Length: 53
Image (cartoon, rainbow, N blue to C red; front, side):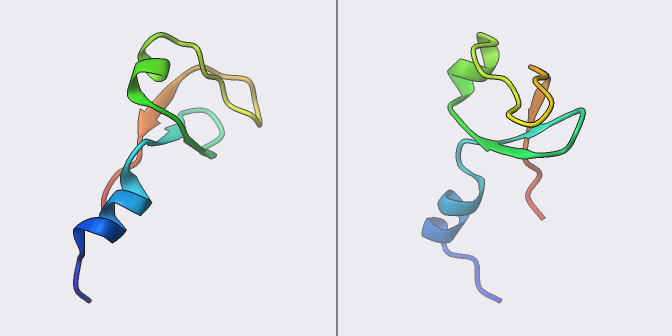
């Protein structure tokens, strides 16, 4: 399967995963660093970037 830059950007750009409940959230890096965004499901502010497979 070919990897296109457009599809990679759609899947992985600005996508973060909650470290507690593993739900996915799309937001910017600056909001995550400033702790302005929290998980919708559990309320945690501990987020990490999604891993590329």
